[in-house]
Length: 470
Image (cartoon, rainbow, N blue to C red; front, side):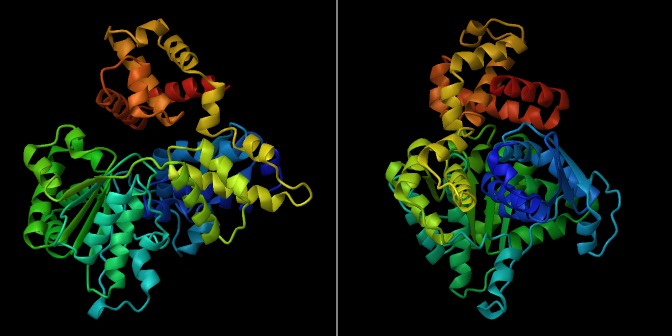
């Protein structure tokens, strides 16, 4: 393990890991539901055992967040440690229930409705949390720059007049740039103004899961009553994943239609524009484009520096300008990565009592971040490693042939360049001689889907990544 990990006990290390995971996972509801109450039960040079409340939680975390957790543990410890999950009796007892084997068809808990009686919540913090609204996200903590000014201005307008202007509010952009922050801030402002509103914050997958559960249990009417009649603000995250779910698209169209007719506000969060969403019916596309479509772009250097400064102050940390400047200079694409690097900087400063932290120390400790990995691992190396795994020539990946092996190798390269090295979509298209970035998006989505559904493919992909890093 690296020197940082050696100085931490299990509790401190897992606290740092959770801080990293919270900024990586673009869903407050999912983080609080599945990860917030986990513990690090055991850590050796070869294995980390994560404690959960029950079998279902362990299985779900393994399925959905294993790679995030593995990457985070490796980032903190410096070692490629095997991660396992185990039910902890202490955690199980917190709920006062025994651990039981869970039906694998059981669905994710449904998003709750937030209702304020007479416009006043007895405990605003509890009410916000119960609705899935992240307490740290508000307009006051959102740093405005050229890359997000339009999205911020439109969000303010929606919060002041929900359902009356910009409905739906469709915000898009790469992960980790502030889309979720703005959506949460709108909901929070509406609540803080004292308006008696009912809010649902749900991912596209969560909406589908709840719809399927309603169909199976014969509760379609109750599901539709909730989404079409009982709520005043609907926030749907990760809408790009709806492309393959035809029945969900029909249900969502009817839901949006009903809410708009009743003057209720809709917020849609996506990683791409409505035009770029695949297999989207024309009538649903028209609904998405019927309000306002705004993007949140990558922050420039000045905005990155301002974000770091604001975040450090909110954490009560005094950080010298040169440290913030180093992070802002090298981490360019993602605000979550900025915040994750800041969290690690604060930890390093806290444990470096006898040896004051230097810029070289910080640069070395951030060496596993994507910007440093690009310097160590070149694009030709990536193509060569992937080609070897698929038994093809690396030149074929950039060529025009489309055999099954070559196409898959090409898509794996797209996925790795994007997710492991944070190359922009346009850069990937140029590097692989593709016509445009939409081809790249399709390839990335296909690999991401296979990674979740095909265990053998997931292992093959991880093997390629490990070969690159080692």
